[in-house]
Amino acid sequence: MKSHQTINKQKKYSWFSFLSAGLVLLLLATGYFWIVLNETGRADLLLFFGRFHILLVHLPIALLLLAAIMEIFSRFRSFDYLGQSVTFVLTLAAISSVISVLAGFMLSTGGGYNESLLNSHKWWGIGFTVFTFIALGFKIFTISNLKLSEFIYSTALFIAVVSLFAASHFGGSLTHGQNYLTAYMPGTIKNLLFINTDEEIYVIDNIEEAAIFADLVFPIFNDRCISCHNPDRIEGELRLDTFDQLIRGGESGPVIVSSSPAESDLFRRIIAPRNDDGRMPPGNRRPLTEHQVAIIQWWITEGAHPDLLVGHANRPPEMEPVLARLAGLETEQTGILSNHVEPANATIIAGLINEGIVITPVSQQHNYLRAGFVNVVNPDPGHIQSLHQISSQLAWLDLSHTPVTDDHLLHISGLHSLTRLNLNYTLITDVGIRQIEKLENLEHLSLAGTAITDAALETLSELPNLRQVYIWQTNVTDDGADWLIRKNPLLKADRGYTLTEPDTIILPAEAGYSY
Image (tube, rainbow, N blue to C red; front, side, top):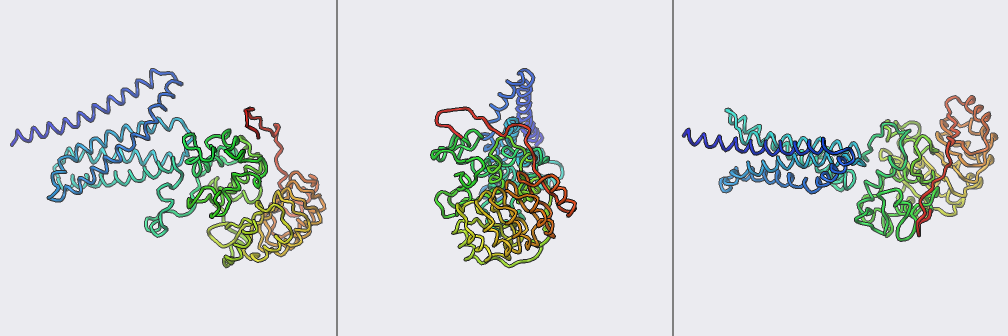
């Protein structure tokens, strides 16, 4: 009997020695390359090995699930023979998980990943490895209390499987877009599993110093578009993996027209109706969220520059809540938006959309709406008049970069629920501004690039809830702006930011490449 126990003990120590030796050799090899190679060679070699993570990561996934399934079935007499192989499969899972984690660390040195997603993927992956080793340890070396040993083994194995699914979810989100595994999960199941169904926004520590393209726009492309527009899969001959490729455009030519979202094919496609063949993303794939659309529209409007910082850009009022969320600031609904309103008639909404007016919700928390005229080529006063059908729900109105005149503003006064009005770069004058004096709920007003003068400020000073007005590139004088602030101390008059360098992008000249 003692001889048999000695043999079993030797086998157990053989497993442990084999496992330990493999890990030591792996660590020694990693240390050798880290010490001997210079910085550039080390970085290249790390990425070379790191890219095998995509291949290696499938091994521990399959092996751990196989070990768990074999363990469950071995509890039944008909399959008890499977229990003899669980230790071997679990050992392979543990070893391959360490190799996969190391490769993942190497791959992450290349950068370009969402930090929040990367950290979640990393720590769940480490947790998966740790609990796999704990399960393996208690599978090989049982303690005197057999029931406790079995309990710890089963619990560790279960936690390892849960960690595996979590790490896989965040890994899929890194490569295929956020919430990859849960994006199309039925709402009832999400609620049952306590999965947040709201749009997930990752915080940017210093929003003012963030580059609009690199930190706000490109993550959207990476999340929702690059799976179909990358070097290995170029739908429509359009790549979105770099700024230069984006500006180069696709088979139909450039997809971005600087300062004009309405003429930019990329923007027209992302706001197209769901049944439009040219809509992007296509088919039944999730459309971009309202915040994502707003960010891309803002970036194009500001010139589609690669390096423009948030703090250096003109900021329309509708971008403030978007930027606040990106900065991690909670935006509390105040004023009229804190009041309940019934949903707008769906038939009326459909009719407005058919006229080219973009209607989207301000928030998922209430029934207030925003309207944009980016798709209306030649808006007439009748378009504004038609919005009276949803006057109780219409809180934000964007008429920027349209040929709107004072005649159009005759119908604005009836939109009594408006809290934000964007008239940037329209044809309005001081005369038209008088039409908004009845908008008592108006909080944000954008007048950049218009012909207004100090004469319009008297009307603005009388608006009781106005808290921010944007007046850069207008004929309003500094003295006039100062008077307005003295008249209404709660009001902020934003006169814009003047770039210290020429507002020009010079791109390399190539055949068939223009911008």
